[in-house]
Length: 209
Ligand SMILES: [Mg+2]
Image (tube, rainbow, N blue to C red; front, side):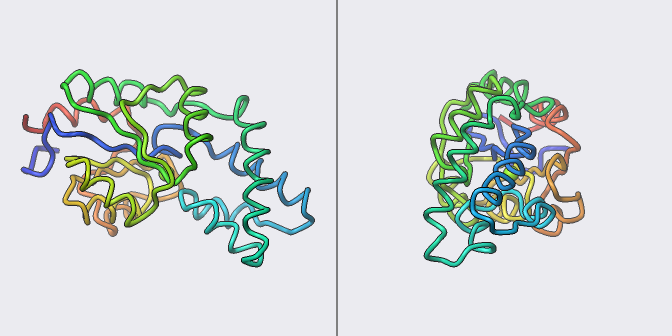
């Protein structure tokens, strides 16, 4: 990839969290299974997996009546915080990607649909240290954060991430470490697609300062 005028170093770089920087698939699916056991409400893990990256409240809305969602959120989060330790890891290249941004003198900011407490716990468990964290942001809310930051780049694993980057005028970098293919991500506006973040530092050096 060559710099195309969108991506440039110096400006903040946004990173999605789940399945972009961290592998949280096992803990997410285990937490939904525990919630299903606790409530007796069937939850199809394959359906959850296909939508990984959306807000918890929105996913729970597929399985619970609206009035039961707040209670389900609480039960899910209890299980998530209990299960996260053994089941959360950094994805390949995540640490190096954050380091590449910092080494260029730019801020690496995590922008995630996750709630702040599990997001901070996940970063700690994975040994990742971004410059800042914007939690509870999904879809257009991510675009608003990117615009407020003046971010040059957003890296994510979902079509919604790519659409948010495009909406914010940031270079949209997709990674196929989540539930979506290169084709899915390009259709949503990805300008560059990487198989993992291990390719990020080399790509980032092609961006103009
Ligand atoms: Mg994600």
